[in-house]
Image (cartoon, rainbow, N blue to C red):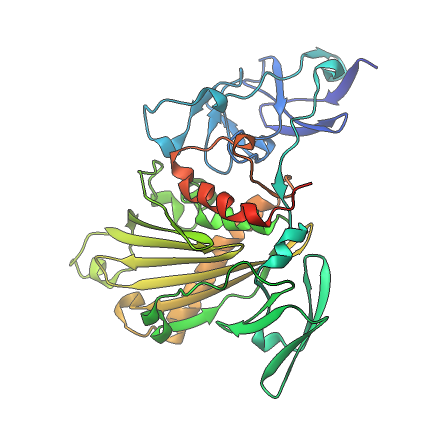
Length: 397
């Protein structure tokens, strides 16, 4: 049959699959003609069917890119108002549609799969040449899955062992780390030395269905805050991301950025000593493949929050996430009491839950490494550095 029936189409973006190809279909108005496009944003390939349609624009849920009914990109929020929009930001022309009493039909001859991607997946053999977290020390004895292989972990007389025996194993930050083959690089030296004296707390480990590479990319990304995290902290974040520098380090990268943020929890705000709008220094650290750190220094209030973030590539469709917080000066107290620590952990869990909810809608089974597979913009410098550092772990066929 030359035409495929997709049924009713409204102004709510709808995901459909025609001959194995995911499409998003919608109307710009209740009485407007239906339109269809490949169901992926050109930026980070997130399904546009997970977005919203309002005021004549289809908005991507990840970074707020907006597209009209012709597929023209109207805004890239991180570039700032009035900035030029790259031509590649427009959606490719979609398939022809027709309508009758049965609903909307898609012409099959116009439906073509997108170009294949060059991905780093969770089961790429090259990842065996790296350190990976496999369990909290307190979880031992246990069985952990890494790169689709099971390892039995146990501690005897203070020594942690794994079966089958890996090339290397060690304990760091309360985590058991394992390298199946000789690792290309070591664990990073961060957090900073002073963080060792800060109050620490682990979040319960979490799982996501996306690859560890996508998890790492999400952690380093600042442009998604106003859109993914609007319910927690993102509502007060700037949409535009200013220029920032990225330093290439051994097996990774580092970036220091100064940002404005709303800090109503600062006791100095209630006392009238400082405005709620304050400055912070954000230091991002990445060591390949999936070691990450964010150190947030409140330059006006003096508080410091360090977030250690590690991803374990368990299988093709599962990544385990470990998050540890190191806190200093939160609430105006050098060593935050248990109630404050519990509140900070709960807040960070809520932030992570927002990321996990979006990741549950993602469909690409790995992190694209080839530059042309995604459209990078100025705000993506850390993401580009991440992809470069992961290239040595990609097994080329």
